[in-house]
Image (cartoon, rainbow, N blue to C red; front, side, top):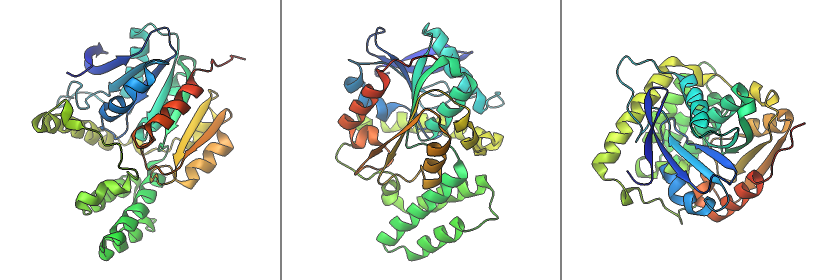
Length: 306
């Protein structure tokens, strides 16, 4: 099971990895997706962060190495927030900070708005706070990659969908997934810019195991889509959260569009923005040492409660 263990949280086994001393400032890592797993984050960051922070990383409820969600089992977006809060209590932490990547940023903002007294600081790594804005931004990036490889007709369909005002947010999101799949082996170029630090997914698990893990993740994602709450914009929450928050952006990210950045600049009372150059959607492995330095500098400062 690599470095993790299963922890029973609210009646469900969650896969949890822990690194560093409990004397260090605690931080919870929330992965993207929905359904992506914390594997790539801990693969690149566990040894970098463990001397300075007390790092807790999870596969969210029903995702990858966590226990599968069974047919007919009650599950929704707020279960992910309640799991985080229950896990904080499990570790007997008065408060902790959050690093939320992509959809994990959406989840982090929702958690901080729901339980502000449980949270010290929040780092949003290339997040989405609004699936409609992110889907339109991803479609533009898909069109750009398609043109690069001579798929002109695919690029035209992506741009037409981007400009279509009549699609629901769920339709935009799902049609983006279908269109981006047509890029085949070039699909990851939507997300990744720097290929110098690959994640070795097979150092710990076989093809068959990953297939099983992602079958669980697909169930998790499908239920969240059916529920529909994740398609609600969280941009209005930015003004309500008073905790210190850092928005990480990058040159080639396709999730956090300009409207996200403008809203954060305007509404995040204790917000700061850090920009990575020569990175795509995942600075935590595309520029791992730099990411570590920024995270440690930000999270080791104790927030003064007014």
